[in-house]
Image: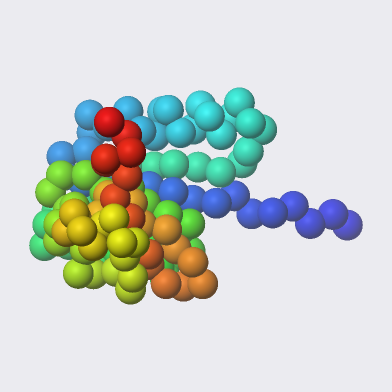
Amino acid sequence: MTHEALPRLYAVLGDPIAHSRSPAMHNAAFAALGSPDRYVALRVGAADLPAALAGVRALGFSGVNLTIPHKQAARSLVDAVTPAAARIGAINTVIVEGGRLCGDNTDGRGF
């Protein structure tokens, strides 16, 4: 019997979120690489962000991206942040490592 790795799950959290092209771009990249991983968009209002991030941890997501309106609020909801994110005061990326939510900000690198 062979054991294949379970697909990793990623998401973008925001409100509004229906306009996001991230799922299509990431899923196309996964398919091109032959990866079973999946990326989804989740509409999460500001009041629901703490519960959503707890769900990311509990449900075994590998990571999420954050968009409006969550970048600043999420900073205080993760277990650790990179030095860049600490300087900026906001995060747009959360990596789940060993059950810990680690925040980073990649906006500067993207421009």
